[in-house]
Length: 53
Image (cartoon, rainbow, N blue to C red; front, side, top):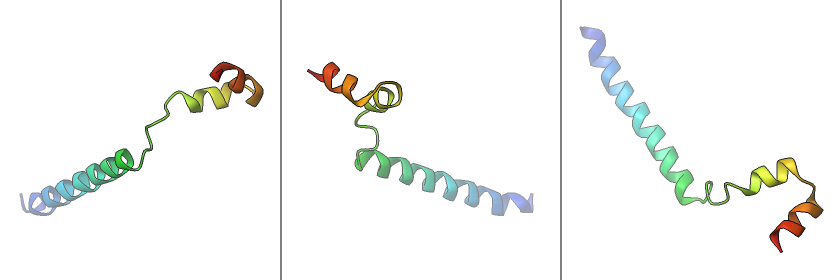
């Protein structure tokens, strides 16, 4: 039971750190272009430019 006095605050702190990291990534635009990465990985640069037109 004494271990819970340490584990619960540590778990809450790590959860808040993860939430803060997620919110930072949302605000900095990390998820803005979800399809662009797949096009860049699968197609040549010329094919991407033709597809955008």
